[in-house]
Image (cartoon, rainbow, N blue to C red):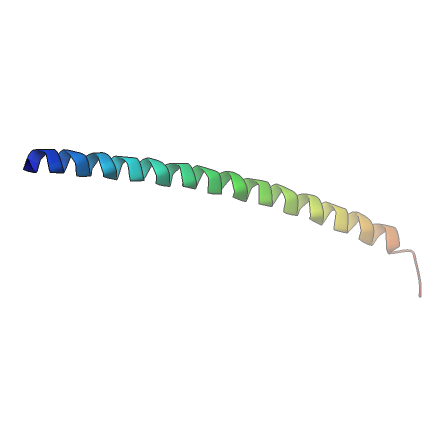
Length: 57
């Protein structure tokens, strides 16, 4: 009985670790996409600043 409980607990730990790994991969991908989007927004902002630099109020 004790060996079965240990086996079940080890399986549960392995499953939880797999879930954590999946979440980590998703977080990494989300971070990569956010970084990519931020770079695009920064490039657009730079372009807009260049476009309006010639205007005077």
